[in-house]
Length: 302
Length: 302
Image (cartoon, rainbow over all chains, first blue to last red; front, side, top):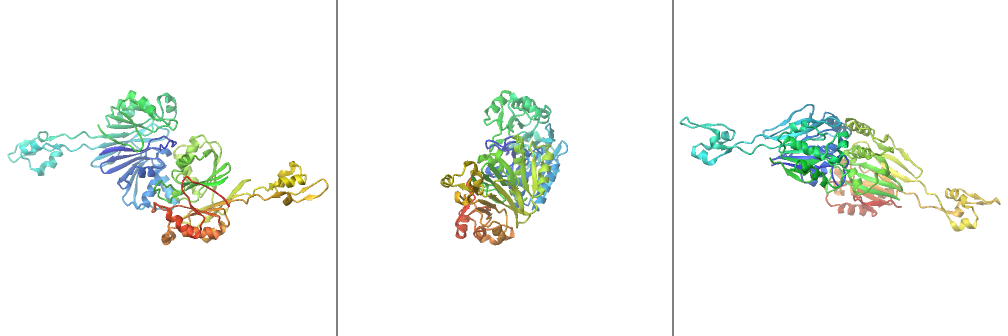
C-alpha cells in the first residue's frame, strides 16, 4: 500500500469547507503527515486516520496555512497518552514555536519529540522500505518539497524454475536479494535464471508552495505521482508570479517535463468555489491529472 | 440584542464534532470573541458570524484549547484586508507567541493589533453601552474569567405625562438621562413623574476553566447569565479537583449561590459522547440550566 490521503487542499483562507494544506502518505503500516494546517487533527478524526501509526511529520514552510494545526495535534497526542517518539522535519524556527507554546501551558509531552531542522537538500529519513528527501522550492520564505521513494522491491521467486534446479527453500531469501546459487556439483545457477523482477519502486513528490520552476521537474524526474500546487487558474499567471505561487497550466507543465506518471493538483485559492476549471485547464497539458479532493485517498501507481 | 453564540463547547480533545472553547458575545452591533480554540475561524464561517464587527478578543488562559485558533484567525483577517484595529486581551505571553509566528512568516498585518495583557482584576474595556471586567480563576496556570455588563439603559418617556405637563420635545433626551424639568412658571417636574425605568441592565459572566470556587459566585452576583465550565459529571469530582476543573453539580451550585438568572454549561470532556446527563445533573441543583450547544445563540435575559 502506497497512497496519499488529502486532509486539506485549500490555500491560506479556509473556504467552502476546504481546509488548509495537510496530506497523509500511507506506506504499508507507516503514516507520514505532510503539512499540518489548522484543523488537521479534526480532519484526521473525520477521515479515521490512525494517529498511532503516525510517526513522522514534515512541514514544508512556516506560512500558517501549512503548520497552524501542528501544536494542537502534538498536544492532543500527549493528552491521548502517546509514548512512542514523534519525528518532526521542519524549518528550524518550528522548534522554538512549539517550545514556547508548551512552556506557557506548563506542559510536558509524555513522548519524545525528535526535531530535524530542514537546512539543505538531503535524505532526511531512510528506512529499509522507503526514504524521504527534501528539496528547496522558490517561495516567499524558505520552503521545502519532499520526495518519498520506495526502496527497490525484492525479486520474485520463479517457482517452477527453483524446483527444476532443486534449490533448497532456505536459499530463497538470498535469491530474492539477487544472489546467485551454486549447487553441490559446483554449477552456478544465475539469479536471473530463477527469479523475476518485482514491480518498479514507486515514488511521490510533494512540491510544496512554489513559483513555476523547471528545476522541480528535474528533481521529480520519473516519479509515480507528483503533487504540485495550483493556487490560480492560468489567466492569473501574473498574480501567481507576484505571490510566488503557480497556475494550473504551470503545474501540469512541470508534471509533463518531469515525465511523472500522475499529477495531483491542490492549494486552491479561496477565490474559486468550483474547481472544475482547475481540472479542465490542467488536463489540456497533462491528461493524467486529478484534483486533490479532501477525504479522497489516491493510490500511488507507476 | 445581547446574546452568546457558542462556537466550541468541548474540553481539550476535539471529539464528536465538538470543538474547543470559543464564544461570540453580541452586543447590538459589536461582537466580542471569548477564547479561540483551534478551528474558530472555520466555526465563524460555519455559523455566519461577521468578522468585520469583531473588534475585541478575550483569551482566558494559555492552554491550547482556548487559543490555538487565534493566530489563524488574525492572519486570515489580514488576508481579507482588515484595516480597523483589533483589540486583544490575554495573558502577557500571548503577545510573544503571535509576534514569533508573524515574524517567521515575514508577515506584517495590515491592521493594528492592540494588546492588553491581563495582569489584575480590573475593567479592561469600557464603552458608552457596556463594559468588560476580568477576574482570576483557579486553574493549573493563570486563568481569567470575564464579565460583560450593559450600562444602565436610559429611562423611558411616559408620553401621556410629558404632554400633560407640556414639556417641550427638545427636553426629552435630558429626561431620559434622569434630569428634572423646570417649567416657565418655575415649577419643578420631577423626573420620576414623567418617565418610567427601562429594563434592568443585563450581564454575562464567562467563568473560564476553574475548580469549584465560591468566590466566583460573589464576583458573578446577580448576573443575567453565567457560563460555567463542567468538564465532568458529578461522580468524577475527585478527578475534576485533581485537574483543576469542575463538575455539573459544582457549576450549578455556583450559579445558585450567585443568584444568576440563567446558567450555561460547557467545556465537556471528550469522555462523553452524549450530553444529556450533564443537563440532568445540573438542573437538579439549578433548574434554569442550558447546555452550550455549538451553533446555538442564547439570548441574555434577566
